[in-house]
Image 1 (cartoon, rainbow, N blue to C red):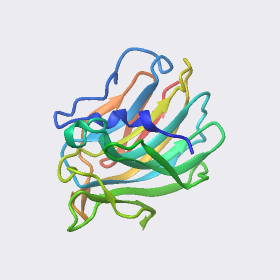
Image 2: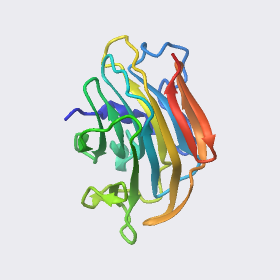
Image 3: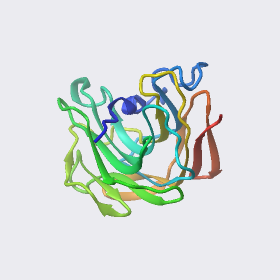
Length: 226
């Protein structure tokens, strides 16, 4: 298991749709630890879903890359606690996997690989969704199958803007990783348990060296640009 803890710094987007700390700066791709390419939803929702595809094998010199959908973030829980849930495709130097990551108030982030091997061109529908009639309780789905027990995220009901983004972490070294991910038919849940609608993009994350390319109203490609 490899922890993607700092990856979720991007989830600190708030209702004003401000970006993650340092996003969009003029530094090169390897100068900052984390860099991003994707979107935060323009409104609050009860879940997010996308069909994720690694268009090529990632080239990871140090650290990791990932493509994910998620909710919550650092200081987004009760009393400013860290609280988030995300699911997606992670890429390392030796493998790619479908994973989810959970952080509950007062607990360390937990990274879990659901599918330990993902090949280029392989697509998976990934979803985080609040449970119908159970406010503040969530599940993670991969390919329409639940892969978690109910997850309690206190004070989460109706509060968060979902995010769909790719990221790169340089592993603490000034080096650049490359990737190309497609986010297909990205959706937001208008109600706990479903009520899906097209993801309405708000803030765009596009750090230097990365590009977000809209290919349809609810689909985009996030890739490195070097």
